[in-house]
Image 1 (cartoon, helix red, strand yellow):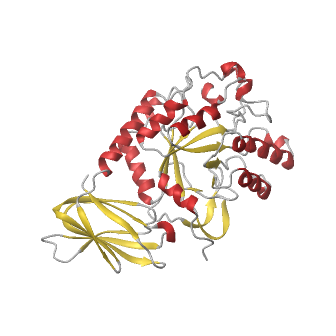
Image 2 (tube, rainbow, N blue to C red; image 1 turned 180 degrees about the vertical axis):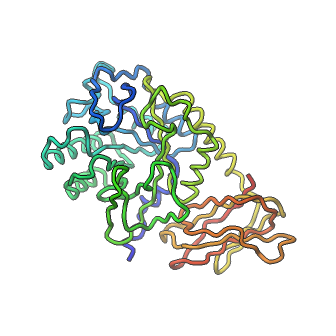
Length: 409
């Protein structure tokens, strides 16, 4: 049985489609550090002399992103805000004479550019096993409460399961604290989730991706899955790195910055399969997005607009088992974009695309797919067509297709 119909907040998340992840903190200033290596990173090393979160957010806005996520505390324990519950935070660094607050500047920039605000917090950190379970829960809740009470409305809270594989948290207490402070917030993947991790860090959702799931992947460090109480509507998010080897900035991997071609491919594999696209860029030691990464992201956004801002002129003819795109004239086509009205939660489980033209007398199947959901970008070899038919072959009930559109790219 399905546990619930989609909430308005979860449906809205799908409309965000594209977001940016910013891994920035003490580790930015210590080249070569890795998760859980335990190597010291003294506070005096934190020195982003040109920090400009507006540059970050203006860049992703131009690229087409609708939301952004800042790493507030990673596994190293460093807090990007002046936390009263830690001795390892930005307020104890020399930066801005101890009066700096990266979280505050990030939130302000997001609001200026009308970008949804996401905050990342790692529940686990180096040395957390030295505390009792209750002591760590107290610390965890205290810090998250600072983030959720000190910066106005926060749209998204991103928890990372990495490092928590063997630890039991007081989930009910944690969720009660979060929901009490921010009733409309979306939570990523853990405890009381609204969205889910796609299960890889390559940015790819499969063609069978459905928003209805009965279990969740936990972290990259385990094959463990968390069972849900029945099937639930949880949109998937596909996180990946702009560079091949590092979430945080490195001066040695600029040659691995992804090409526009590869980024477009990942857009097809994520948004094109009904999931969200979440690209990570590590701001550099100046506190700015690296020039190469920023330029590439803008080029990618321009290419997506070029491809999809001008559908071919057409009209729509609905039928009992789908709809037909009637082109204004016979011409080459190689893409269709379709979606469902998600108020019903996405009910199509199998569909086909058929083509008809002046010389194709009876419609011919050129594509067979699985779920439709929020959006499907279907690419096929160019074919001359006058009519393209979206045929629903199997569904779990009544459905409504959002106007399909055809493109020649």
